Length: 445
Image (cartoon, rainbow, N blue to C red; front, top):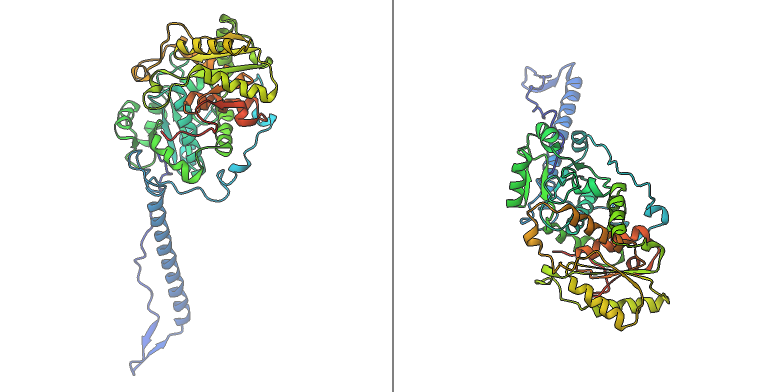
């Protein structure tokens, strides 16, 4: 939603008549009275005021035209139509090439707080030129993380406020009430909690109940309140990804570093998530692979193979490992394998054996898994056990010495970005490698 401060006044037109200071002589010729000089000054002053008011009205009109209501996902064609001016000098876009990381920037200390920043939402909204609310619903978790970061970058460079509402998303913390962002991660942007839309935002900005907003967003791609003060975008909002090519580009180190900075600021696991992840690792006898020479393989199958990706055999992943290990003269001790299809686990095991890679193999993938189909799963509540097992896999992908997967997968994209928080100085996207392509990229669909 685009939110603008309330109007506290209006321009009052000048209607008072100017004082007459000129009188006619007997011959009919106008002559200045003793007060003529003062009257002339008054006239000039009022004319200047009137001209300034006219100029202010014209400027206001131009700004309203340029930054009017944000276009919906299906309607957006460029920044002007979307109410989004291109970022100007001094924004993060100009500094994109200087995005570098140090150990201090990475900030991966075990003391990561689980307490999100407290926000007065009304003051936050009114304090920004506009505020966009990213409504999280549908789509996979890593896809949502990429969408949130993409929209945050776009709207942040625009100078807008940014709020996320994940209260209608099917992924939640184990209490069934806390949203996925507060439950597992470290968001530094405002995230609404259950009921806060209806109890805080709705009374102040006269919006309908969130349940109606969810329906409107799902049908039209966006929702604007009746006063045109705020806009909600459906967070999958992939139409907004189309803004990236002409402004940011979509691939390579600069774009990767920009997204990695957002990841390390907002999407590291918080303390309670770390405890849950450690419990899954202990249950599956998986060591802390940050202290060994290790590799994490991720093989995406299932519905990903329907028009989005080729089926890369397990041998491709092992060949990529051997290429990197030979370059670094590294002997791999632990191999972690994850997939939504257990057949891929068997493929990599077999290839490791054939190529004489003698590592200890770990996985949390069950032999009953035969490819996910998110189209069947997206509308129901996510099973907590499956959620924490999946996040354990993502954690291990980010912790291993090397990550080998596919960059056309949102899981692979997020894992490689998280790795920057742990390995800020490692080469090639913090030792992340794709069997589909060599260059990391931000998918436009």
